[in-house]
View 1 (tube, rainbow, N blue to C red):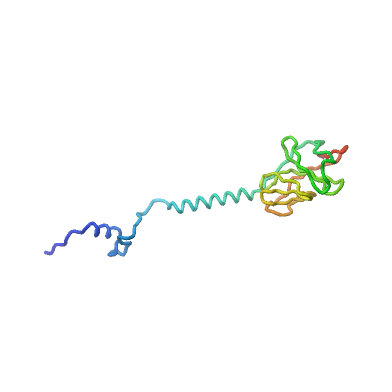
View 2: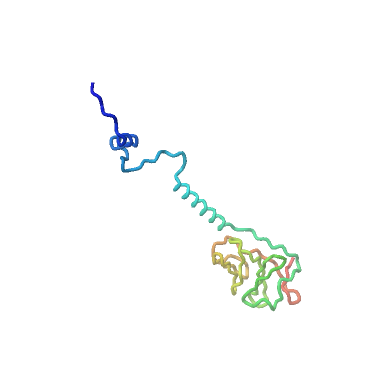
Length: 168
């Protein structure tokens, strides 16, 4: 009867790792045992993708912006609103942009961008949301360019005694 010599430590680790004899990685390459969950790289990639998706969803949301001011509320004196431009006013914690696109014609809109939720600013014959460089018409409140899908909330106004006031 022929006796085989006992396996050496190198032979055992190579064989158990699927070494060259078994067509495996061999002693120069580490073999990871199977893991029960995803790799750290997969988790980080998934988390980053989810964060980007949430950021896009928040960025792309269009909020309904309400303005609740009673009829007769004074927004501005007519001589405070330059022709071809507008002003930003704050009444009872509500921000309103009042414009005079043409001499004697006044408009007003809620000053919160429905896309970004930030304040718009008068910018000559339009209103600018600096968050994404969106522009809204000072005449209609409609989106002129940029990502918003809806315009600014219209505030009906009238001129009474030299003042721009909220109309019923």
